[in-house]
Amino acid sequence: MTKNINLTLKIWRQKGPEATGTLETFEASDISTDMSFLEMLDVVNERLTLEGREPIAFDHDCREGICGTCGAVVNGRPHGPQKGTTLCQLHMRHFESGDTLVIEPWRARAFKVIKDLAVDRSALDKMIQVGGYISASTGGAPDANAIPIPQETADLAMDAAACIGCGACVAACPNASAMLFLGAKVSHLALLPQGKPEAARRAAAMVREMDRLGFGNCSNERECEAECPKEISIINIARLNREYLKARILSTVR
Image 1: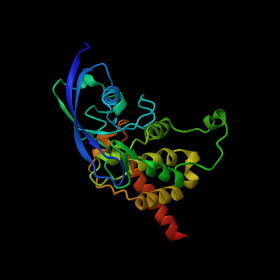
Image 2: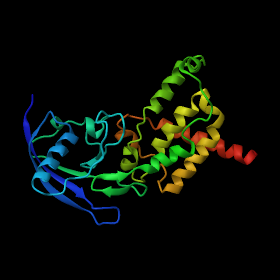
Image 3: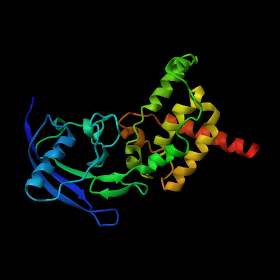
Image 4: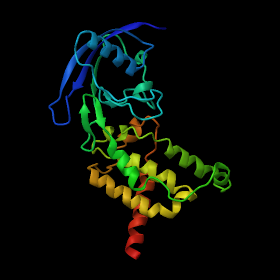
């Protein structure tokens, strides 16, 4: 049943990467429970604009839980309180009138705040650039489908490939680790025959880049798995560790 609710928002405001940020309080009144979280922020921004105040900057694009662009920490939870949900898919019916919501950006050394809730997540792209691909030509779809792959293996690869690169795992981790993201990207290629020839080089290069960019390491806290909107399993971190160990052994042998 549709109803309107009133909320108190404590939103992080920061003019730029080098500026000092602070939480600023806003009253969000008459918010429809049919709205998504981002639509609620749109309404708040429209009202701020009409008042001659600067709107809140936040990341968004597809608003369908596909692109991984959106993201903010709501009351300490990346993407908010609903499991397996991106911020753009979170609806206001999950909140009660009178609630206070503290909304902050992803916080990690590798994710610089651009402005307010918007952060620079290009560090994830840089890890992909050094190894998150295959150089072999796979041909068209019929050629790729001609390679027999066990259904279980294909399912594991698809589960890992579901990662949208939103960075929630980094924001959730007390070490700001990107191991779940990296584990998913390494796993979905290492599991398939097309990705095996470069598996060792890929794992070594991507882990090296992750360290260079300032991400922390995994201490098996599992917050990443709990907050991932695509529910990527930490089994992929174990697979990444195995691939990296094999890469180090191979480099020693050579």
